[in-house]
Image (tube, rainbow, N blue to C red):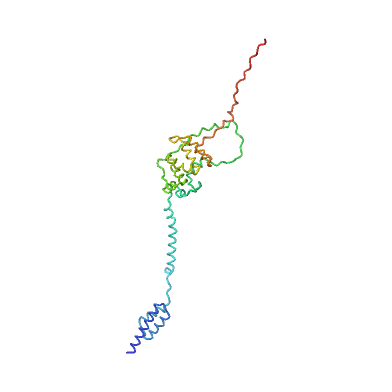
Length: 275
């Protein structure tokens, strides 16, 4: 009986060393100690359970557990790519070319097309062709009537410029002032004149000078022929070929209606009587 108790006590001590080896991830030592425990105390429940767990082959993980980290990473990547356009669209709204007005070195080509729609209509491209023979006098059309002064359809409610464009204009950005003046061109001529003077006088922007000439050429409270002539000349000097404020070209009279210059009839002197 005493020998049996001694063997059981030795088995418990050996089991403690096996547990310590398991905590230290020493698998071989743990298996060796557990085998010694079973030799000292056959059928020991804890030693049998621990040894069976160590000798059991490792279970193959399921496919879902193996690919779960990759699936999570791929889902986050797809969600990020889908959120980027939404973030850009919500951060940059579509008012009047807000990003364009933030730079003082913009060119006319980067402005929206509506700003130069009238200029494109007024200044069509010139097609060089071989001169044709002049038409006969009978087919010459009547002279075209003089073009009336340009009339604009005023809008009752202007489109407000963005705060960033106003701030840039206050800091001296001529292109920002030009864009704001174009906004108020049809709805508030006085405000448009105020904002267009900066890009025309300080930066010599030809289109701004041409717009000022158009405003001063219209019939109304701002009609000023002297200012119209000044800004029209400045627009031409800065490279603007044609402007709405230009006078209509002179039309030559038809060739068939040309008359010979009338000359005064020559008077023959009266005969002097012979004495």
